[in-house]
Amino acid sequence: GKHWIVPLRVMRPLLAFWASVGARDDTVERLEMMKHSFESPITYDNGLVDWFSTGTTVATKKAVSMTPGVVDRFGAWWHREPIDTNDFEIDFAIQFEGSSSPAADQSVALWYVYENYTAVFDERAAIKTRDWTKALEEQSLGLVGYRQKFDGLGIFLVVPDKTKSVNPSVSGVLGNGATEYTLLKDIPTSDSKKLNFRNTNEPVTVRLRVSPKHGGSIVASMKLPDSDWQEVFTKSGVRMRSGGYVGLTTVTGAKRSSAVLNTADRVTLSNMHMFNYDVSRVGESGGVGDTGLLDDKYLQTRKDQMDALNRLTRMLSRHLSEVAPKEHALFNDVVGLQQKVHDLEQNMKTLKREVAMSLGNESNTDVGSLKNDLVGLRTIFMKDSHSHRTKLDAVHAAVKDTGTTLRPARTLDSAPTQGSLEEQLLLVSQQTQELEDTVSSSSSWSTIFFVILVVVGVGVGVSVKQRMDSYEKKHHL
Image (cartoon, rainbow, N blue to C red; front, side, top):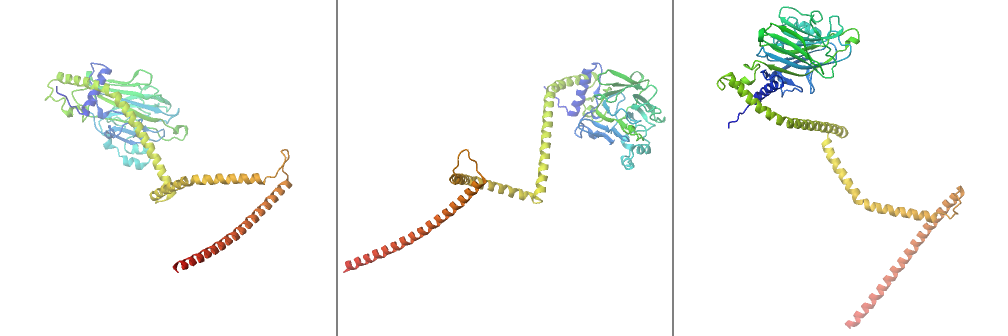
């Protein structure tokens, strides 16, 4: 039969669609907007290029670090493109970690607004100011890093209450672009939900559901670790428009005179997932619609489209269930190998620096020469080691024999005295002198004997020669 060749950018949203349907309600239809979704670690290979980060926000291996535990810091995490749907859901996991007395105005805000943040924020000017609080105020971004007169929706996670006491709460605010809102004056709102989302053992999950159905509704919920979902904001009879931008901003609060208040919570974002409940449209650029899979040219009716999607998602889900364990094991192996290579690289760099410091700039030539010298010395030592060992054994034996010869006789129960030691040394000196005289005398007699032998030999030779000459003369005659 025919086989469908489906690009990866088509497979991912379809798999998300199948997973969401199977995990929650079979009657719900939704597609995950993959360009607006991520799981840490996020890199340029899996979507980081689609996000704009500024301030102290940086993507790390474990999570997106929004702000550190330091006062007077600001962080922002915004998507660069709008979403093309007004029927969507946003889920994200966030964690607050800090002391019991954080800064007096630390807050985080989730935004769905109709203004492109990357077009209005002047990062270069903010950096030159060297004071994030002042820089945000100069750019009219004084409400948790965004406009006080905003057009759209904001969900605020605020650590203090209006009395600046630590009392975490969640508030929802609809902005019309004209009304001005101020932190710790208008926010937290009077109907805010008090929930202690700080210093949890795991990240808390926040969910925002926006729907145009039944006149429109907005529902925000939060789930603490080991707890059920709790609604924190609801609004009925409101229809949000499509084309909004999604982002997160956070501020750690201004510096205070008291040292206790100069601490702040460290805020990290673990993941974010966005779902489109209007399957008649893609919801973002680069989705399924760009491939022509949902074109009327191929699938005439909505029923045909859903049947095709159901068949494809079933096929892909079976494939995913088989491949996922192997892919996970392979990923762990690659991570382990990468760590080993990194450790080896660091060790080699350290060794290279040590050699360069020891041998100077000509370290490469000197290392080769040093290696050859070491090999040559080893060869010489190994070659002559046996003969050296034999000579040393002979010397040890000679010293032992000499000690035995020179040791004076004494009884077993007698001990050497100072006088006896002097006598022994004198005896050794006398024996040494006698040995030298004997050797000298022997050498003199050997010389005399050698001279006599030479003279006798020469005489005998002369006599024999004369005799032979005599014999020759007689023979000729």
